[in-house]
Length: 138
Image (cartoon, rainbow, N blue to C red; front, side, top):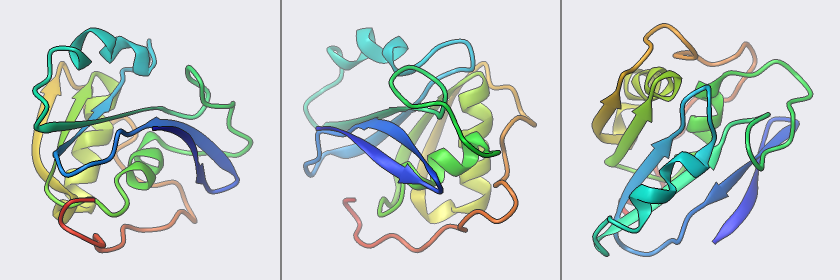
């Protein structure tokens, strides 16, 4: 299911089929958007729940109206998840690392593809910190 998720005063586009599969969150690099994962989706087993999104200002997500970090977007997308597999490419890898450090209960494992540590690994000032997951399956 595709939807827009409110993040602060802005929103991000999210694709999440739902279901009981293992949540695998795909975080795009700074030079692309969630469509870079199109070729991967068809190859995933049905036991996987692929969740992808466009950071603010990328792809289908509107441009931000205030300062933000990729970390904030990933925290919002993973709200309610526990033990998810987080796949981060380049700058998306930095956001994945930040999520593992700030919200370890949400991350079961990390798959980092040429990560760029130091980018977007923390929340923006005034952002909402991680909350405990609501269920083990998201």
